[in-house]
Amino acid sequence: MDAGIALAGLVVGIVVGLTGMGGGALMTPVLVFFFRVDPLTAISSDVVSSLFMKPAGAIVHIVRKTANLELVLWLCIGSVPAAFLGAMVVDHLKVIPGFEQLLLAMLGVALLLAASGLIIRSWFQMTRKRLPWGEGPAPMTSADVQVRRLPTVLLGVLGGAMVGMTSVGAGSLILTLLLVLYPQLKPSQLVGTDLVQAVPLVAAASLGHLMFGQVSLGITGSMLLGAIPGAFIGAQISSRAPGGIIRRALAVLLMASGLKLLGMPTAGVLAAGAAAIVAGPLAWAILRHRYSFTHGTHSPRNRAPADDLESIDDP
Image (cartoon, rainbow, N blue to C red; front, top):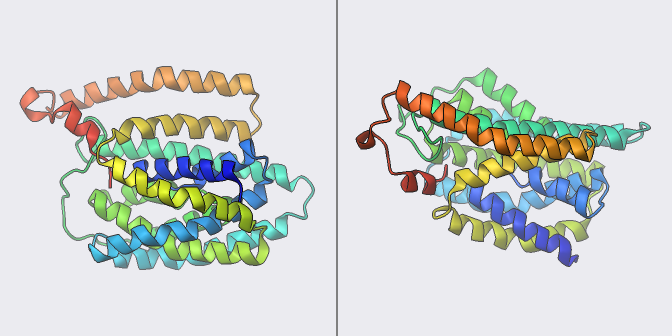
């Protein structure tokens, strides 16, 4: 057991509990950057550890009937085989000279997609769900969802392949694209559906990495030692903390990590991060102001109190 990795797992678990995003987008780069774990071992160990974190949340949503099981079925038809094949493809590619750099680049692209997903998710909350602050649950337009089978299967294939190859995608990419495909889903249904479909997805990816990858039981056990209680703590805090602020900070962190993995010099990464920190809130304020006036929500009696909006999180 590694105390440092366990502590990192605790921090990542808390963030996952606070924001609802997948831990792979955070834990894998932490293992690579701070603990000098080789990329394939980091990805394999992170995927296997996720297998033990997903079922608890999924069971809760099944019991509460906040997961659309038909949607889960069609997602899994695409994601389960793609996740297994993704792990197998990575194993076959590792014999290629320079494969480690290729894997780092793939991970960097996945992190940039995850950061984009967080931004798009807030954008859709603000526009389609009529929330000027881009946060919190909104009234659903329909209790039923007409499942679009082919797009849903293709979404599963994309998410499954990304998880199998990079450990990133289940909680970041799929959740965002589900919001795009099915904007009428309630936040609880959105999160529940994503969590339930992630269990067989991660199981398939874990099997693939156990057979073909480089799983380190020491790293996996250390991560779980911190991540499981961390996720519980984060879930308890999430109803009280301003999740939107945390999510925006994570978008900047994921962007910076992705750029670094793609080979951008440190000075460039810092400049990009600083620009995002300065320009991001300004651009969001302009969009929020424009949106509120466009939809007539600028009136004080039509706008929910800022404290209430900031305290509500997507789950």
